Length: 111
Image 1 (tube, rainbow, N blue to C red):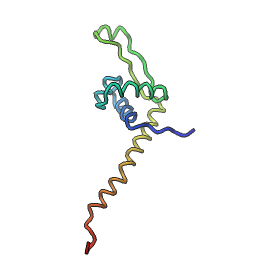
Image 2: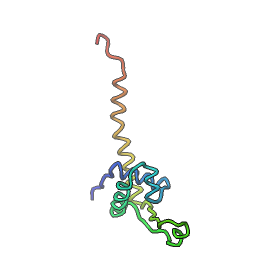
Image 3: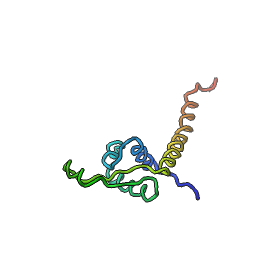
């Protein structure tokens, strides 16, 4: 079965989760993405098997006087997809960097 490629947004969200931002608002803060992007993406990532979620205990949220949080965690498949996506996006920037280095060379003599 061919491996699907993560979008840049999905990659950034998985990076935020991997870096320790376990719930939606933290992901929004870490990435700068709006909730209308983050929450649907988290649902798609969960449906795709890249993340798992669980609700915190209601008692904890009630004690802190806030709604319960849904915590997300990368699955093994999510960690692998993140590593692949990071490598792929890094490679996308390489040709541009090489082209930039070539254009900074001195023009040939007589040009």
